Amino acid sequence: MGAVRIVLPVLRRAAGREGRGAGARPLVVALLRCSSPHWVLLLPQPLPRRLAWAAEAVESSRAAAAGERRGGAGLLARSLVLHAQLLLDSGRYEEALAAAEGSLAIADAQASPTQTAYCHLLRSLALVRLDRYDEGVVAARRSVAAYRSATPRRADLALGSTEAALRAHAWALGRSGRTAESVEVYLQCVELLRKVTLWHQFRLERLHTRVLIELTGGLRELGRFGEGVEAGSDARERAASLVPRLYPEARTMHAGLLVDLAWCHGATGDLVRARATAEEAVTRCRALSGSAPAAGAPLLALSLDCLAYCLERLDAHAEERAVNEELVHVCERLAVTDPGSHEPGLAAALDSLARSHSRDGEGPESVAATERCVELYRRALGREPLLYEGELARTLSNLSVRRRMTDDATGAVAAGGEALAITRRLAGSGEEELRPLVADRLRILGRARCLAEDDEGAAACFEEAETLLRQLMEVGDPVPHEAGLAAAQSALSEALGAAAYGHLDAGRTDEAVAALRRLKELTGRTALTEVHAACVSAFVRSRDRDAEGTRAAWRRMTGEPWPSFVYRPG
Image 1 (tube, rainbow, N blue to C red):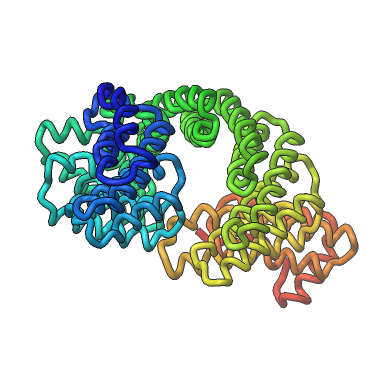
Image 2 (cartoon, rainbow, N blue to C red):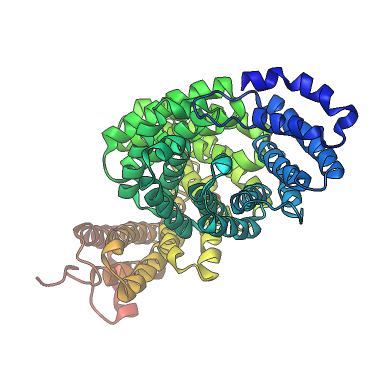
């Protein structure tokens, strides 16, 4: 290869002015040779230099095509293919697409089937990068079909393979949101890669590693965590070998793999290994963030989020808090340059940090972090109205709880009421899976109203939550809702007792008896000891406060004497 580069000046002079005529052909062949080294262990020349050679090859081959009757068109088509590949590597996707399509459009090029397949492969990669996903999937399918029907030639070794086309097809499907289809194609590709000869295994090592890394991410997204661990572990071994380290994207791919693998380990219950893998990911991403901030900083945020999750599950709260603080700082830096992409991540990080503050008894700090989180989700909602409503409702619920812990009754009611309103609207729009969340947020608002001494309002929330949960238990599996029902009934008993006392203190005996009547009816719907105990206490305390008035009101309103006991017979 070095010898070819040495003779380039000689060939340029021989080609004549502007490379016209047949004399340009040897120069084009040499430029193509320099632009696309074939030996896998040779470090390639810098991309800008290879791109310049390929551009020169295109111009010279155009001159050759104009000056020759035979062969010039084929040389131009091949030059355009190589130029398209290097433009793609440079991130110049529109130009890459134009070059690949220009190569296909040369009618008398007599291109080999493999070259045609490679053109479609490059088109698919460029189209997906340009967010033209459906077209990218179609081009990838054409590429796979063309490779499968082609007879491999030694001259076409550098022009991709069926395995590369399958990887492009899977990647295009994944980027278009068709993850399940994407994973199936990745699995076909892995199976094909396992069957190639030893020499081809060596040549396709980089591709094999990339396929396994991307497959791990897809399996994680589908919740197939056990398979994700298997694929990710294989990819991890390959990514640690010599060959992938020769390529600039290897460090980024390896860091992303570690994040996916850590999540898969955690989801399968292997938290110790998940933590170790996440810590390794964080170390690698910190280094990558220093050397290549554009690629490393987003990955660092993902790895820190994963590590924080593992530490929370392991009850390592002090370490979790430190990681959450670092995560917030990283997300803040990212949000400065690209708020649309990174403000939702910053909001999630602030919510996690607020949880750490709350756990450590730092109520005001927890509220402040959650308020920032809510504001960020409001801004994200303005950009993506359908995407962040649920997250806004969730963080408003957290804000209500955290304000209540700091005795901010007014703020807790306001946040809880807004969270409930959003959740009701989402559940009413057909999202049935949100109905249990309506019950949860009714309880949160009810507790906030208790703090604000609106006991009747609180009782209404808890009663509605109880009714909703009973409906859900009647039509589906009751077990997931049993704890929520118990919590609603226990809170309702406390609210009704407090409402009865408040009415008596204000001289509203009839209202007090109405609350006591609802409380007694509640004991007939539950066997919870705390509810029955609260009922006994409420009746005793109400009788002691105004024995004659409450007894008389009870008889007048119920037609029954004052109860001597409220427990059901055993």
